[in-house]
Length: 552
Image 1 (cartoon, helix red, strand yellow):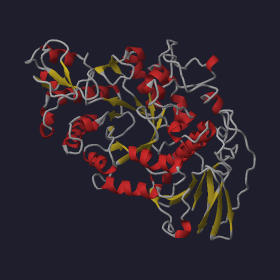
Image 2 (cartoon, helix red, strand yellow):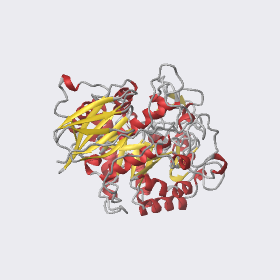
Image 3 (tube, rainbow, N blue to C red):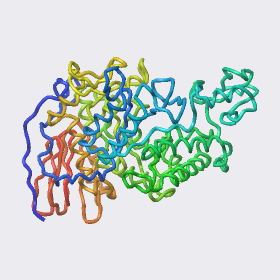
Image 4 (cartoon, helix red, strand yellow):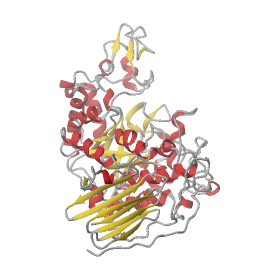
């Protein structure tokens, strides 16, 4: 193979938030920021979204098309070209049903849309326009509970012998804990609501026979309603709570029956030609217990990969073991389902935003760490999800006053004075043009976090090995000579395509020596250089928070 010697780019520019690199604390190392998208040339993107990257949207905060301050369906439709350009293959819409809250997880009617977001015709147009861009649409579906304003629950409370009484859990006595007094009708009784009294838990009877239960049939009917509207799948909320024993086989049994029922109906209905309905579960458990839920669903969110692995690796500059841990996780998942989908992510609507969680002592350092997290997410194994605003470095801490609103602030599309799409239903306390920046401004800056996301999403879409290739460790992984904890090294392999990926997750520079033949570097971040000592040894110089992908 031809040896490659790359030129080092020395130009430095301050980060997009206006602070000097590393500024803000006396003990934070200086980080050199290289103003480049990549000094290497990747293969041309052919337009196929083989990486299957999904993008989570809180409609209320995403894009406001009519100026009423609230994001809406037409706003999402207006931004589909933006998502398409990023390389998004699917969008997950947080609950869009009629409800009484701003978050939407208290569903009043599963077959009606939230009027704050628009009409059913608007929703149907969104689905149609997404499909024109080869973007799947999945809806947040809430099988654990409904709203206490749902007609099902109001009727259930009215007497002890009506047809909806069995839809919920009732008790003549107060068992304590998450039991609440019935608000109307049979007020001497109590009902179960694990999350809140405004969200009573649904009752599906015994898991072994749940398919015969009226509640189960009603929920399947609601899912079929949306299949007929053209949706491509569902994100199932709180699946470990449907039956109270989270580690028994009850929840996986229920989920398999629900999936099979909806999937049988989905056959032949996909506008994009997919054979099976897409269904991903929120199962916030450790790896071993979460893995059991793969007997019920094809896809599950992997919370551990972020919270216990990647977040730790970047915050502690200790990244070497991340790929080995990911391989170990996948081996556990495969014990329960060979064709499992490992839905990876950084933050979501229920968590502290990734940039805030990564910290670093300054806006500049948190920005560099966030770029690093994006680069790892989009080059490692799994099926990545991106929470809206993550691609522009939005921040938010739900543990502070304001709670969930802190991580659901309005998306910033352009400078505020001319941003006609920016929702105003709440005032942003953390995310502003000065502190964070917006899409329009960041798109013009080569080193912005937006362009980091766009670059690595396109790389993942372009190279099958990055999209769905096998994750392998380097041959010398366990050698003491390779014990550089701040550097993460792994291979991605699919067919004849073989890529070497190296990340330096630290604020200090490092060097990695690769022994073997290489074809060429295809992309980097923050000015990585490769000096080839003949055909068999290559010195890879890694500046702070840098990445490189090399074709072998």
